[in-house]
Length: 291
Length: 321
Image (cartoon, rainbow over all chains, first blue to last red; front, side, top):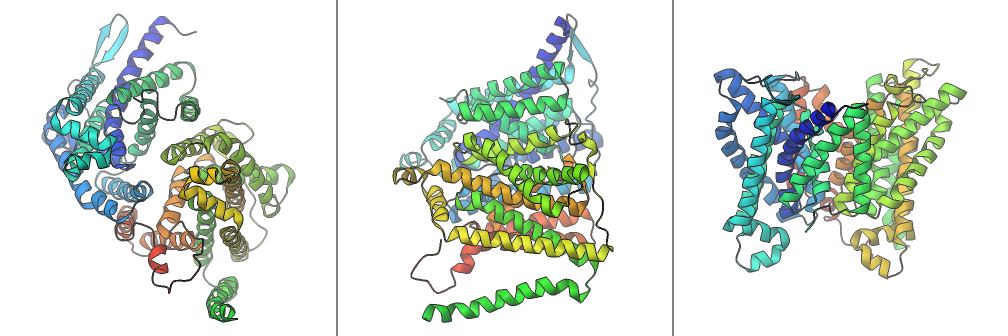
């Protein structure tokens, strides 16, 4: 039988991993909502962020938290470039943007994954900092410092995205395009600029998620596919169109996974998760937190 | 009379190609070419079967590998327990796949667009987990099947011919569907489901039927493929990547017609084969080229290849569906 201590530990680690899923998902949900593009390559860019951080740490001893200063602007620019040169171009040529973009982004996955494999080999890599492996204790529940840092990073990022979307003029424009594209155009919003910023933001948040993942777990060039599945889960549970939904969805998915894995083998946890997702899709296809 | 005349020259080329493909093993080509042909036909057959639900009805299914795997496991189990040849039992595999598709599809085909795609993706992800926990399917160990009692060349040639015949049948079924009332109904679902329903099209029945037919054909292909590989295991026959590749092939070729998936599957399989086998630059670099080509093709031909070929033809009075 499960003890109170185990239960507490499961809840804590569920919240930690859930917050990271939420950060990974928030940008995915944004680009899906704003441009109707299902960006399969979202997580592969998270992986790029994680590998840059790993590389900076190994070569120059730069702490992953400091490397965020380099990674975030870099991925932001990469997102804008991806929008300007790829997404915008195919959006001009086709109406069925969802399926076309899936091929495009799948191609990007193949390219980036293999580039990473080429440069880093397929071995799993660990981001080992001075504080890796240390823990704080809350009663008898261990709180690994890396997980605490990821959680804080995730919380700050989600809050920042929330305030960007609800508090700034550009953010409100993003929401406007999301809700009613033509209406936004009519009221003088520069759609191109707004969607470009959305892509920049999406990839920047993805890279933060990737670094959180790298702090807690090992990374390998094909890890992104597993992450993507969780991103799908979180987006469906949280529903498109709400940052709060994504945050709660991420935490919920994290909690379910870690509580279930306290009772049953991990592979069966995934089974339960997917069956839950199918039921969820059937009962509330727009997510629990759709406004 | 004019129509017959116009059609005849068009028929000659396909017949020559088909005759060549069927007689190809008589030329005693290398075993590699027979295997390549087999893989090529497998993907064409898969992409065409997928297109029944994904192309005509417009419901993107990322879960077809589930039906493929069900077919593969069914034939493997029949062979193991009853000693029946997969060439006969693949039909049973197809029927089982269709039943699963019916049970899954009836509730899930209510979902639209990306949500349906996600639900089917979940199905594809659930299947390997189930298969690797069931005693019946020998968990993660998988099932080995005996080889055909012939030389390697002969058995490869047999598989080559079998898959070619199966592919032809599937392509013909797709062609028939396109010209039938059933196909018209599916197209109306793709174009505007609500309107179709208002006009009296029983959309639910059509969608479920199309999904089941698609799964049935995929299951048959899976059965033959398993026998060719002589081994089934969860990561091999329930590979989600394969699901995605099938979708890519159909979309790349063009989903409106039976010829689209055939073109898409041929191009992608050939690109993949050529980059990995002939360039000799290592796995990663060849995959990078594969990905780059995928991106370039879709950037220049975002609607798939088919509309750009059709566009050059003189317009007909009746739009073929």
